[in-house]
Amino acid sequence: MGFPGTWMTESESVVYRVVPKCACSTIGQIMFYSDHGTFFDGDIHDSTEGLHKWAQEGSQPLIEANVLAHKSYAFTCVRNPYTRILSSFFDKICGIQRNGRRYRGNLVPLLIQKYGIEVGDPENGFDFDQVKSFRRFLLFARDTIRWRRPMDPDIHWSAMSGHVATFIANGGCYDKIVWTEQFNDGMQQVLDAIETPQPVALSDIPRFNESEGHGPKRAHPVEDYFDDLSMHLMYEIYNRDFDLFRYDFDNPANKMPVGEIDLDEVHAKLGD
Image: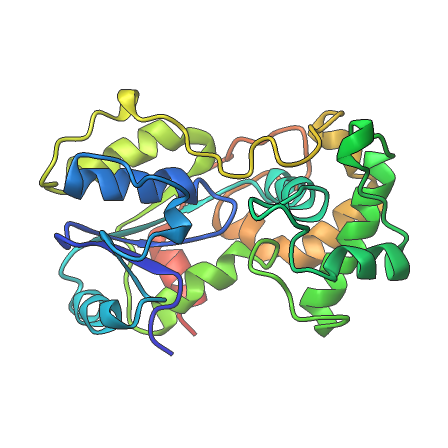
């Protein structure tokens, strides 16, 4: 199976396991900059050179050799499950993608037909009942993850623990898991632990949010989207994410972690 979703700098200074919707655009650009002294011109997900990626065939033997020998510092980044699933909804379901089309072609029409979801229209300022539509989307997300119907789960709303786990199960070992909510602190710890060809001043790095501006803005506080049923679904789908990465399941309004991540526990529980 190898190491899907894994990126590595060309200098092999650091290895990163991508978790979608968890600052991956910014992290990828930092890695690119740390080797080349410039940012990639465009969305870092579209780069085909300047950064090793498992999706690039020529990079696979280099990444595999590095990870299995734990030659470089390896890290990943996680995010509060409540804000992550909301971000996926507004970006991937409601938003127009950077190619000018809806995400995954017929996905949104399917959701409108089978789940009664509304996504709004850019022409009318995305005017629709966000709370009602999001809760219906959450039912759909649960169905894809629990029963793989009406489609397989998408990487943007499948559990973070699943992404993190493949790296461990195939022989990798993490040195750090960064919280998106404390990004500067966590990323600085990563940079302090490695040697990069180009110096990186984190305070000078812009935030690369490639989904920004493609869809409607969230109109309500996070907690307004989650009633008792929604929270039940969230626990059904993401209980390992809440537990392992120390997020507050009981209070959707609290996006901050509530304890320290235990890397030994993460490796033990996700290494099966």
